Length: 162
Ligand SMILES: O=C([O-])CC(=O)C(=O)O
Image (cartoon, rainbow, N blue to C red; front, side, top):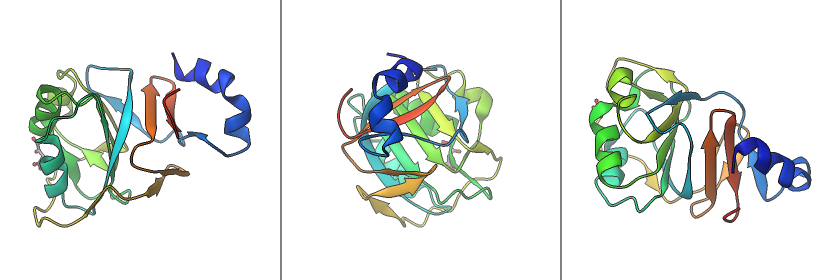
């Protein structure tokens, strides 16, 4: 169901600030899959994408990888190789509170990607960050196991499958 229809259906939940939340419209659309949804796995990193690679190397099983990169606009946390790996391993999408690179390559891959902006510089590879933690960005708190719904109109987070 489109995010607009979900917003109409769950209007009360959204305006009371509860179980269904709408992210601020700050995310660009990348990847061939314009609409995607799935249960969330979270990462909290800062200018280091080691954990992003480690996660996308695993089977995605239709999940959405939510990467809180602290909103850094100083390097990219995902590029064409990792996007291709995500698609091969069955991830539905990747939501990045940070930047991506190789946009033309990402746009040719059958996966959904949302991120703040393109950036040509790669990130550090120091192995730092946290996995499966609550993250807060786009005005919304996101917990592992919640559901993400994303299309050309926006991004929703819900505490259950809608
Ligand atoms: O490892 C990186 O920095 C990301 C990258 O360039 C890619 O996925 O192609």
